[in-house]
Image (cartoon, rainbow, N blue to C red; front, side, top):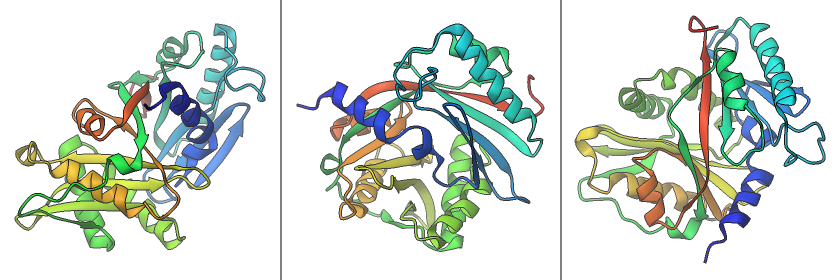
Length: 277
């Protein structure tokens, strides 16, 4: 039986703060905050804010933060954001198990808008491995720049985003530096119909599955499940024993069937330049 509280403790220990800065071009530290910038000069640049806890004692990241402390932390985020006019957006992720009084309200007052909540899913790697590709589907890593663009643009089509503009240059840089992060594609009828990344977290037993998307007309065929299985199998020899994902309502049932469980919920709060200030 999987121990939810143990998995949540592993999540807090290994997957927050500095661990969430993988792939950033630069990182600033302000008290408990890690503030990263994605994208090199000349590319689209976005900001991401992480923390292990917001309490005043850095030795106790699980210590509660009262409203005055939370307001102080949010003011630091806003000052950092406002000093960087090159950023098109900044994201702060909240977690339901954090003891941070009034954090959603403070972020909203600072111009950050909540997006759809996602389930933080964690479970053993072996539960995901072994699902074959459906007939007529080819699943393979997107290792060339052309293949990365094709996969990332398909995800943009699904999400209505500009994901490709940032993630392809980032992936090229990280792979050139020897990082094992890989974008995978499922191809049918000569086109990418599903895609997603696998990212081992250095120095931890975790790998994350991210960015999973499938074209609507290809859903319900087991393609995404097979794609996730291939991603998990690809890191089985790298010391990875746990898989994690921030899942939408569409992908959560697939991961649950593979043995992953929800340990907490996360809501991204995003500020976009030109939006509410």
